[in-house]
Amino acid sequence: MNEAPTPGYWLRAKRSLARRDAVMGRIIRAYPRIALQSRGDPFQTLARSIVGQQISVKAAQSVWGRLAAAVPGLAPQDVITLGMRRLRAVGLSERKAEYLRDLARHFVNGSIQPHLWLQMDDEAIIAELVEVRGIGRWTAEMFLIFNLLRPDVLPVDDLGLQRAVSLNYCAGKQVCADEIRVLAAQWAPWRSVATWYLWRSLDPVPVEY
Image 1: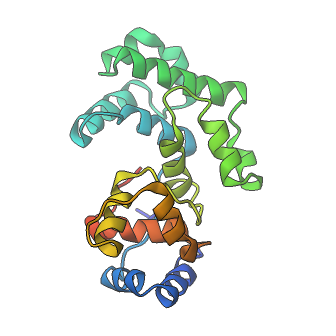
Image 2: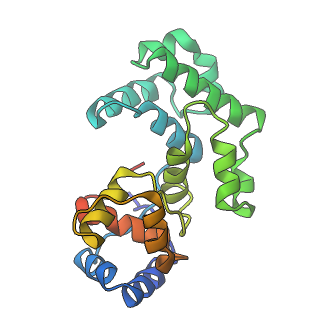
């Protein structure tokens, strides 16, 4: 089984961040053999983020497994065809089943067109994704980082990033979004990479989105 690819910019980003920021350099050196890797295709990644909302990782994996069994290949059109009753039967709430069908419709009717994302900037993609019910800015930012491997995303509302900045830079003092933005100015254009390493400072095992 082939490993998912690591971004081509990763080594360059690590070196740049470590050179500019001593705290970041220490964190990077502590995790020398792991890196961000892309996971899954766009529809499945977004569908999985909806399935996992507000439930435990174990419960989300169980529901996702039943959904994958009910919809082999998990193509958007097949999710629509399955219908609400059978989506509920795999363990989805009525709201999540509606969200999943709305996501599938966006892919089927062309209002989401992944082949165009290469030419679009981060904010344009976020604006497109948040039109889907059940996808907010945080989910869209996670998608940019983990699926599209965009290098300069700063998810200031992420609780893990807030906690990591607090512990590593502010002696445990609570930080706000604006304070994170000011601190993170020195990390551009590699703020996704900096965020990923700050997450590692809290949990060395990467989360898959």
